[in-house]
Image (cartoon, rainbow, N blue to C red):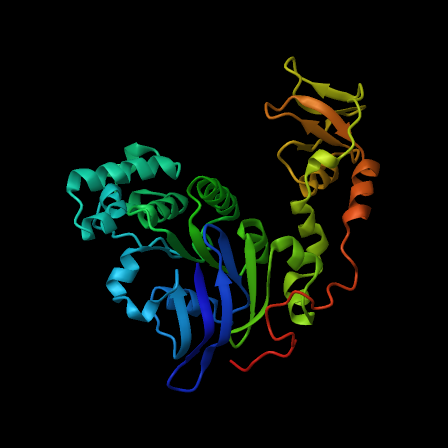
Length: 356
């Protein structure tokens, strides 16, 4: 567990980057720091591994004050992933991944064997091991960065906007990969982002910070979306926070009916489109066992006739769901229009921003 106790970072010119921050980062879970520019989220992250030292207060790692640990020793025990991967351009991929094991005195054979295992773990072709960073795509480089951070099997992983420099499709893929890895490895992860969609997708807990480095609210994503602590949090979450909440509701609850005859399928039962006088029209699919209610709604909106097609994991049609069936659940799970009352906030409850 990582604990912040009244932590403040004040620079010599008087600028306060983080003010009286107190929170707990649970062991084996993903905690996301999110907020606008100037809210101190990256500063807070870097104080954990002492890339920046706090002015006052205390940060503990499993009960030990990080200031009592030699910085190089501390950092070798904490994985760190940054926005641009930060790979050494003159080193092959296998040696980039093996960087920390080399520093820890591992033999070259052992370090490289670990690196090869990790390349496979993060979804990269082991054949890329002999290439250099410039020969990889941005998404591949970020995967290498994650592999390098995991090389010495650290219990803690710090990730500073690691996916913000790649395109949306690659970013979604990297997010999914991180969730898959976390389901296997159960690391203590602190993840920094300015993107609220990324925060609620990845975080077991989300800490929303306001400008001036003060904690506005810390809660699970579903609670955050339904019970924002104040106007600042409500506005940061956006007007579509009700739609975001649908990501936490399983599509298994959607009432299905048999597929009608105007849904064309191939010989294996996979959908081809809706039959119309002008040919096949667009359709949208969702998988009830694995998808969310948001995915089901999206499938209905993508379909020309407003009917979502439910498919199994092999893509075969299981049934369909009209907007009436989806609307039933939307009405049941819609959050209160007024937002939260502020209960459950870990911040000061004020909507007034501290000066930068």
